[in-house]
Length: 132
Image (cartoon, rainbow, N blue to C red; front, side, top):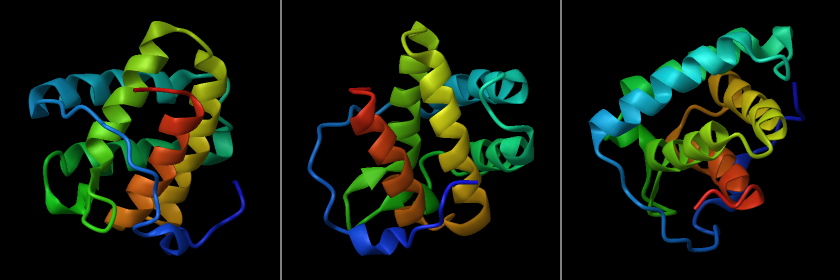
């Protein structure tokens, strides 16, 4: 797994980005498809796959709920993840994005399931892969 980082260091310090909000039904469809990709993708280490799947399920279970919203950053983890999903589904850099996403999702499941942990870990991928 990636090095563990205290994401609270970044609370309220994320650069501001316009992140389109999705309807709950859209997010659910994206996350179900993502779940299938994570289950079988060759660029997700088998040691972290179960944790990554758990994190997708956690975020999916909390669509439009408080655990996915970081008030300090005014961002929703589920909306950020939906943008990442779209980028993955486009196929551009899919292997790289999925590999990195798997690590961040595993960290969410093992050490950062708070709203800020979810948002900060996903936001860095959103910015790195220009998902907006």
